[in-house]
Length: 295
Length: 265
Image (cartoon, rainbow over all chains, first blue to last red; front, side, top):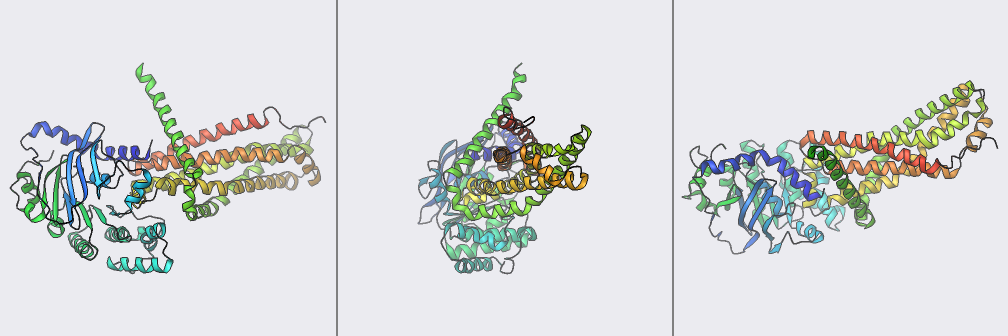
């Protein structure tokens, strides 16, 4: 079994039941149809990442069903949507951990599925990814975790590596935690350490997979502040995957709402929060009444 | 009828996956890509040496004692106590030490690899490596196989030494029905350096297979902690089967037609 097939099988296992319900609900509701309205993001720099009519299925479960989306350069974008609707699958497509069954994914205009392995590994150096639980290496302390990409991809000496790592750890408020092992950290600290590691190579694109999951509201707010501060300092395309509306209100400059594998609506955050679309209004207001039910 | 063929078909598919995976890991080695992470391979060598050597040598020592004691008492019962060295030479070198090496590697190293890499897989650490632009196959699997190639030959020769030493203690010092010189005369008469190479080949084949099986089940683990537990158990079962298969084939190939038994001249 290949690495990617393994990934796909895992994704299928994780999402199978949820997506199965959504499939069932297609025929039941039948009231709401995607119109996929896309508003101009207003930026001058074009798109860092583009999804072009991407379809992806795991067995009988269709996760992405003709997804078309542009992630603007130099903005903080949020992909919002109900649980199990394919948000994490989007991230995996961006970094080439998954490939689309149909359609294309472009990063800075280059097709990810067409890349050879060496090109793919080189392209991934443009990315910093913050995984849900930080994904710190359990065998290394926090300092070594953050230093790892520098040691692997640069010729910097240990002094320089130390300076950069300490700067990043200070930025995320972990200056004193460098010698601690990941299992000695709280969930929020692990996320911040993962954030420091994601930033250490000054990536062009930073992806956050549900950075607010498992955090209390105050720490979520603090993490959002941190994301905004660091984006202001470094620039680049930041993509945050979440279903937390408060985080979206705080952080997002551009929002795309994903449901059943398609974009319901995307555009600048201000416009989305005033959208007339009934699904968007229901989701962003967190209301019980509307096209989105429990199914 | 169709269902009756489903399970064997699944086994054949799984075997194909495993062989393909073995090929990929060896590809990392022979292409030289793994040497980009030579430091990690050395670190893994250190982990193997510090974590597994003592326990493997202890097991070899205990089983060497067993071979010595059984050989001494059997030879006493047939009126030839001076020939206790035959048992020590054959049992230690040809069978017990390779098997003890295989058992302990399966239990300690093989399951350890599944648990470690499987846990990394379910906590997104493998994906984290990939998105940093580092091939997880090279960094996690290639380096561990390279470390095994560095360490296991020396560890195994040490195990053989421990087993020989234990047999000597049991036969000469504990039971004491043969002199030291008499024991070694027979002991060396029934083996030569080629036998040591054969024994090493047998044990080393077991070791490489055990590491590859551990890497496969760890790397492909999924389904959360329960999935990692299941993968660990599966790797242990498969490794024990393969250890015995390699053991049987090794004995047949190396000593089946030329047992090197200078009896009667």
